[in-house]
Every structure is written in C-alpha cells, then in structure tokens.
Picture 1 (cartoon, rainbow, N blue to C red):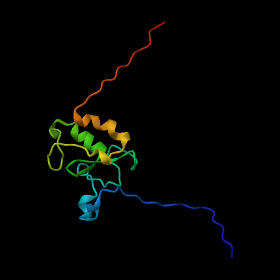
Picture 2: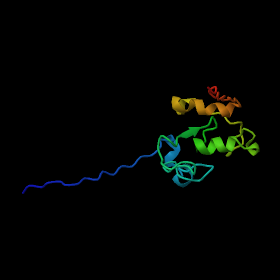
Picture 3: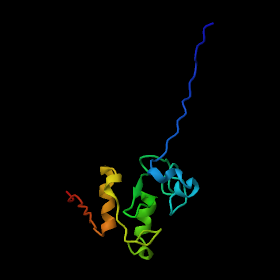
Picture 4: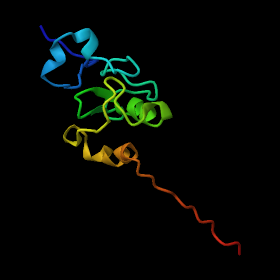
Length: 122
C-alpha cells in the first residue's frame, strides 16, 4: 500500500522559560502582573506573540511583558517602582536580549532627542 501526502499542516507550541519556579502555582506565575495576559500570549500593545513581545525580568525577580512595563514606568504613579512589590525597578540585563537594551534606557531616566532637518528649498 502506497500513501501520498498531499498537504501537511505543522502545529507547534512554545513557552517563555521564566525560571525554575514556573511550575509552582502555574495560574499566577504564567501571566504578566500588569496586563494579566499569559506570557505565551502577547501584550495588549502587540498583535503577534513571540520575539516582538519580549519579557523582562526585574532585579526583584518579577517578570512582565516589556511593553507593559515600559507603559507602567512611563506613568507618574509608578515612581520608577516595580508594580508588584514597589521596590525601585531595575532590569536584569542577563535575561534581556542585546537588541532590547536600547529600549531599557528610559527606565534609567535617560532621554534622547531626535532632530529632523528639512532640505533647503531650491
């Protein structure tokens, strides 16, 4: 008997590795503390989960979607503190891809200004 495969649809599943404690109390540990969306999903700012919606670990060991945390830190109510335990926020750079380190600079109150020059009229 010969079988010919005409179509094949692969299915995959992935999960963020949030550390050794991710198996304990899975209902509370696997969601962003700000938006309450699972880490495998995407934050409200994104449309597709994955590398475009990265996670960020704090020195306090809390984990958030990076976009959620950046919005939180940008509000006056945050006072630069972790939304879970109110310690001064500091990111663990060992868990953050080097691509996203540039995004972390607003967390340290560093601002950059862009200037746009217009071409001279002829």
